[in-house]
Amino acid sequence: MSAALPRHVAIIMDGNGRWAERRGLARHAGHKEGIPAVRMCVEECVRRGIKALTLFAFSSENWRRPPAEVSNLMTLFVDALEREVADLHRNGVRMRIIGDRHALSVRLQARVAEAERHTAGNTQLDLQIAMSYGGRWDIVQAARRLAATVGAGALRAADIDEARFGAELALSGVPDPDLFIRTGGERRISNFLLWNLAYTELWFTDTLWPDFDVAAFEAALAHFAGRDRRYGLTAAQQGEAESA
Ligand code: IPE
Ligand code: IPE
Ligand code: MG
Image (cartoon, rainbow, N blue to C red; front, side, top):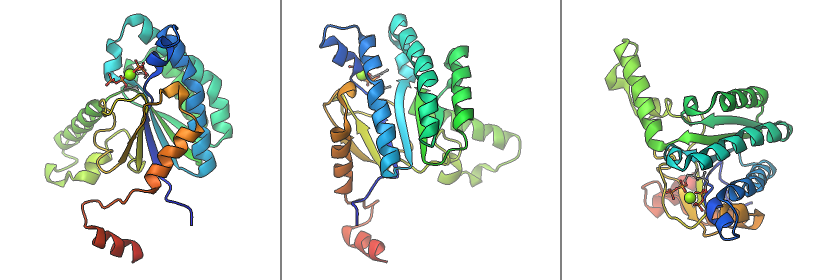
């Protein structure tokens, strides 16, 4: 039997700027150099039968970076979407953006909408790209929508439970990530999927994102396969549940 495979992998792709700076290049060169690693992850997920992949590309807080870096990144997203969408489609990937999409440029919003429409019928891999995304933003927008529904008389506050709340979040319909990967050496969540990471296995590596290769991805999967996920139960209870 093959070792346990995550259904959903979530990745903070960090370290592009340092990758470039170490080579005496502009930070932007590092962002660009990160694209092959994105392609590799998508292909590995498709090849291995991992059903969902969520990538953190740009956080709510990243808007506060120097305007030139923000604008370079936005141009890179527009170009990458345009270039990659045919391959994604060929690989059976359904691509969606999660985040505050209205904060994106009109041009990028149009590209995103087109890529989402083009790949909507695919079923091999659900790919979520988090852009202008923050875990707190996600929770607040869910709360606001629920409050509006309650205000309109369509829902009782007492009927809001975890499932109902989760259904308003950006990852609604996608199982919670089983494996979280962060490259670039920092050991923090940086306002990524705060709600959905509740029981996710966390794996950190010092490898900078442009250097993240198949071997590094395999190391993360091997770490995951060795975990004992107890969800609050004792190890004995968990053993019983698995053999039942
Ligand atoms: C991650 O790389 C990409 C984005 C946040 C857009 P960074 O740009 O944060 O790279 P470092 O952490 O400065 O090396
Ligand atoms: C997290 O990386 C966001 C993305 C990779 C898109 P950051 O580089 O922005 O995180 P901090 O600032 O080190 O926490
Ligand atoms: Mg960083």
